[in-house]
Amino acid sequence: MNGNSFLHSYLNVFLLTALCLITLSGCQAASDNLINQSEQEDSLSNEDRSSADSSNEEKGKTFTAEIIKVIDGDTVKIKMANGNEETVRLLLIDTPETVHPSKPVQPYGPEASKFAKELMPAGSEVEVETGIGERDKYGRLLAYFYVDGKMVNKLLLEKGLARVAYVYAPNTKYLDELENIQKQAQQDEIGIWSIENYTTSKGFDDSKSKEASVEKPTGSCSNPQIKGNINSKGNKIYHIPTGQYYEITKPEEMFCTEKDAQDAGFRKSQS
Image (cartoon, rainbow, N blue to C red; front, side, top):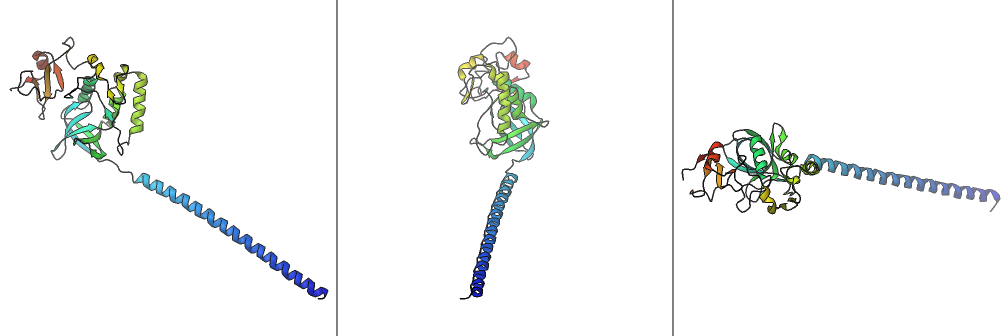
C-alpha cells in the first residue's frame, strides 16, 4: 500500500469514528431530555391530582332551621323547613352532662346549657351545616350550628364550656381550628379548665360533680328534686317526685321548690 492509500484509509476511519461519537452524544442528550420531560409531566400530574382531590372535597349541606329547644349544651332539637323535627348533636364537642339518665349534673353543665339556651332561644333561627356522615348511631343529625354568622361549637369552646371530643373521620373539617380555641381556654383556665383534673380525654370526672352549680335561684338547696321540662310546643312544665311522668322526664332545669319553678315560668304537670 502506498502512502496516499494509507492516508486515505486513515481519514475514512477517523471520520467514521467522529460521526459515531457525535451520534451517540446526540442520542444521550435526547434520552436525558425525555427523562426530564417525563419527570416534569409526572410532577405536574401529581400536582393536578392533588388540586383535584382538594377541590372535590365533600362538603356538608347548609340550611336554616327553627330552634324547638336546647336539650343541653351540645344537643338541640330543631324544626326543619318541611315541618319535620330533628334532634341534633353538635359536631366535635362535648359539654358536661345535665340531663343524662345515669349521671349526676356535672360542673359547668348547667352553664353550658344556659349559654346555649340564651344563644338559641326557642323559636329562633339557626344555620345548620351537616357533617358528611350526617347521623350518629342514635339517629341524631351531626352538625355545626351558626348564629349571626358565628359557629356555636366554637363559642362553647371559647367560653370553656366544652371540650373537643368525638373526633371521627370524615367529620374533621374544623378540627385544627377548634383544638386551637380549646388550647387558649385551657391556658386561660376558664370554665371546665378551672377545675383541676376534671376534664380528661375520656370525658368529665364525675367525682367533681358535687361542685356543680345547678341552674337555680341563688340561695336554693344543694340537691334540687323538681324537674323543669320544655315540651315540643315550647310549654314550660315542672314535675314533682310523686308525679306520674317524673321518672321518665329529662329536665332542662332543676328546682328546689315549686315556687322556684313557678318563678322561672314553669307550670305544674297535670299528671
